[in-house]
Length: 133
Image 1 (cartoon, rainbow, N blue to C red):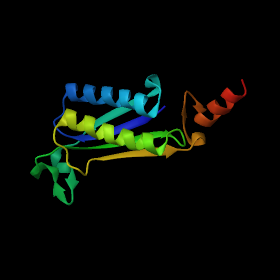
Image 2 (image 1 turned 60 degrees about the vertical axis):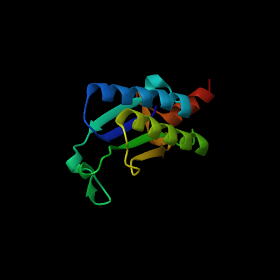
Image 3 (image 1 turned 135 degrees about the vertical axis):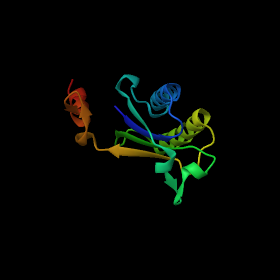
């Protein structure tokens, strides 16, 4: 049940929003083995005058940028899977948005299973319930 929060500093469009949501959902399922039907993606656009890299506004650069914050259950992915995800997500963002500033970031947070859940049950409860069946 990953939650993905994306901030994009590029021209806003329905087409770009749909592409980003689609590739992130697919990539999260394929590489991190998460269920598509439980993957939530929130996308927010930031004006170029509000985004700075190295103390310089991105508006003065010929590049786009983004920040992807993804939360997954702790211990459910290997280092190699996470590295592959970061690599492929960056490439997909670049294919969608155009040239990216190298400081565009992806952060994968691993949250303890007892600290989050959905439909009123923690991930840990689901795991224990599944073992007792």
